[in-house]
Image (cartoon, rainbow, N blue to C red; front, side, top):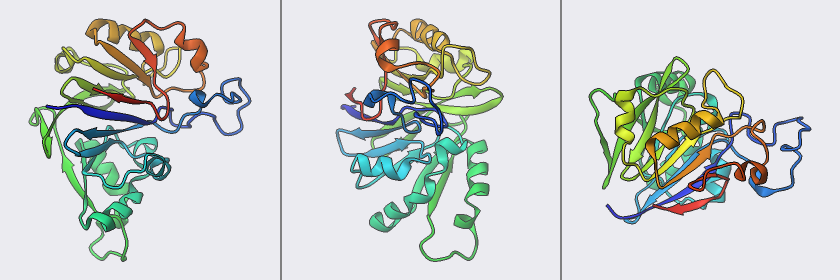
Amino acid sequence: MGYLDIVFLGTGTSQGVPVIGCGCEVCLSNQAKDKRLRSSILITSDKGTQITIDAGPDFRTQMLNANVKYLDAILVTHAHRDHVSGLDDVRSYNYLQQSSMPIIANKYAVESIKKEFSYAFANTKYPGLPEFSMQEIDVETHSSIRIKELEVTPIEVMHFKLPILAYRIGDFAYITDAKTISEKEKQKLKGVKHLVVNALRKEEHFSHFSLSEALNLIAELQPEKAYLTHISHFLGKDKEISKELPKNVQLAYDGLKIRV
């Protein structure tokens, strides 16, 4: 496999940063790295295959900011609103590409998307509605899936009691909203060189990794480079938190571009 270009479209938690009405120092910061849209990444292969992981409420803005002219698929981690509520805006790609958009997700997310976007699955459709091609995957039966030349490994992680998906492509892996990972699924992350993982805040949270929990996972997996995402305003300013991190770890920020 050749290289992957990764763009962090958003690195914030469900409310983004700044949070509406909040007067904390992070939300009032004038530093660009402290302003975070909802979490999503864009992956472009050296052969031009282009996908996103998740499509939250900032999806339209993110596609415009990154000047994304086409998408081959959307990988969904889970169907909470901050990760899928922008799916309606695939209508533009439906029109431009003259095809439905492949949406890849586990059964819980597929069921939720079909419910939340029921109008897109109705027998009688109003013209101009989004068109989805739903692809349900199960980690027990799908050791990997293919999107053109890309081989994608789905990895089940737990978001409190909800099974959700992380994804690995070659030496790159993306995990968000995780709280626990079984030893069996963790084996799929062995040898990964570039790891993205959620780190909500310093204090423990019932359904997300805290900073220390994320750093413990990184220390266990020992990637060459790790990036923290799904960050809330409670974590602190980028400039200050960055001083506390190991040399191979950095806070991701909106617009960050890496090649792996």
